[in-house]
Length: 331
Image (cartoon, rainbow, N blue to C red; front, top):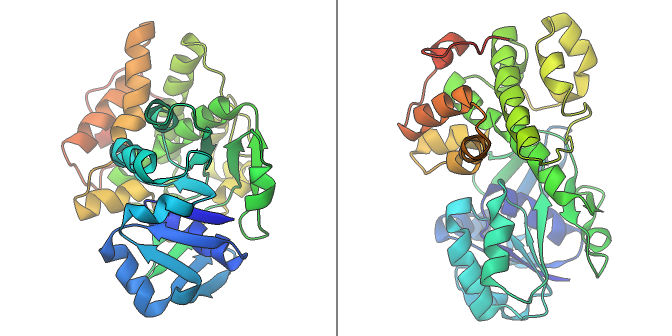
C-alpha cells in the first residue's frame, strides 16, 4: 500500500521504517529536524529483543509538504494530541476521500477529532501499546512489548499492515482497548516525575504502590462512567493494581512480562519534560479528572500529578513527595 505517516515522530518513524522494510510505499510527513538526519543516515529501527534494521533513505519518501498525502491508500496519524486538529485539516485538504485514516495516538479524543473534521471518511481509532524513544541520529528504539490494535472495518487493513516485526490486529471493542491503554499510560507522568527508568520504577515497591493507587482511582472513575476497560497487558485490568502492590520478589515472578522492557527505557513524557516540549497530560490524567467531575468520583492522585506536570516539575520526586498533601490514597 501507499502509506503516509502523518506526523513522523518517534512512533511514526519506527513504525514507518518497519512498514517500508516490509515492502510498503511509505511517506513520512514531518518536520525537517526529524527528516534531515534520515536523509543523511537512513532510518534505523531497533528494539529490546535485539532487532536492528536500517532502511535506506531512498526506500522512503521524506516530506514536510502535506501535498504528499495526495495519493495515499492509507493515512496513519501519529502526531501528538495538540496537533491532531491541524493534521485533520491537512488530511481533509490533500488526502483522497477514499483513503482510510487510522489514529495511532495516545488518549481518547484523537479519533473523535479526526471524525469531526473528516465526515463521511473511514476514520478508525487504534492503539499502539509500546514505547519508542530516540536512540541516536535517525534511530528509534522500541523499549517495551505489545502488538498494535486497530478498530475493525473493511479492507482487512490489520492483515495488510501486519508484519513479523510489527504485528497488527483488529477489534470491535477498540474503545475498551483505548481505555485500558490510557489507564496504563497514566504512569507516563509518574515515570517522568520519578527520574527512574521504567524497570527501576517497576522494581521499587513504593513506586508500584503509587502506580496501583493511581490506576485504581482511574478504574473507579471509568466504572462510575460506564466505560468498559480491556487490558493491554497480560493481567486483567482489575487485577493489575493488586499485583503491583505485591512484594517485589512475588511481583517479579507473577508479572515477569511487565518487566520485558529495555533497562534504560523511560516514557515519552519524561523526554518531553526534559526537552521543554508540551506533554499529553491533559489527554491522560486530564481525561480521568474530567470524567471524575462528571460522575462525582474523587481523583486526588490524578489532580496532584497533573498539577506537577503542568507546572513543569521535572523531579526526581519520590512517591512520598508526589503524594504530599494527599490523604486516604495509600496502597
